[in-house]
Length: 443
Image 1 (cartoon, rainbow, N blue to C red):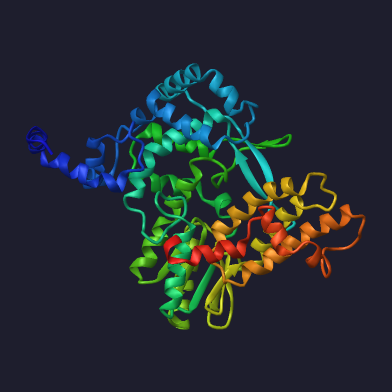
Image 2: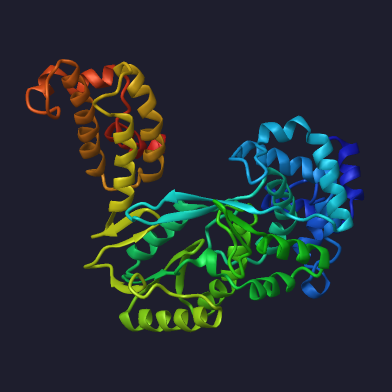
């Protein structure tokens, strides 16, 4: 470091130095919004704990440009206006100027959300997904870029869903740590239709505890109450925040954050990912008390516990599922629904009537295998050779049909097309990937 550089640093006020020291924690924030001065205020706390005049951070074109970049990276389907990302970018500058002006003057109004139903694994029911227009996704992203750090500052540490620097694997790791520390009584909680039942007024009141800008609060209210278009039917929701909306994950965390802190104050080990959470206790009595606290809090918050899926489990003798994994007997593996969903995907890509070459089928299949393994690689080691064998059976069945043979690939087919044959064809091996992942130098 040069003497001139040292002199400049010495001339920087201590307040600014503290902001710079805090930057690693806030490295994920949008820099067009969160200047060093704002980060200092965030870290030290604003007067009265509430932020004023935030709409002027939402509407600048530089924030909207940054928001659009995130929307474009996620791509996604068109909303009710049938405008996709490619069409939006063709007139990007004009769109962002218009959005900025509408947000500044308070004339912005979101359009209806297009409802799309996606299959729900292990159920005949579908899961509703709300698809806002690209225009609304840009505004919601710009809004989230302003609001998220304000709430993230005080979120409880044992909440892992939709948070910067946290994820499913962190939540799963925490559950495993607690099980190894003899927290064997598990309260498995299921909130019935959580995203669709969040009370609007109570949610807005929680937001208003930290945000006093009326225009920002009105904007959030408008997103909560924007119409929903499902086929030819359209209605205005009276509660809930739509799954698929950019702002929904943050709002859902804001609503459950008081519960996170309540359980921590009561010394309960709760691990939460969005609306999926478990409380791990050392004794059945503690678990019963924790469940009673949860019941009372959810009732007061206007939420509903699923009557049969919410239960207390003795993890030493009963399995429980969390974030796609099944914990059982000191090990974890994919829960049956997760395994079946994976097999459905593989079946679709390995139909016996597939007309592509084997190498093309394998090239199409491998990304699915890699992606699935990346999430489930912490499963018990016997999970992987069994799945490898099942996948090779699917491929042998294709080859049998091409030889005018019927039935599944088995018996003599293992000699005709041995495992090494598929390895030579480049088939991704889950077993081999697991062996490599377990080597210390490759973890």
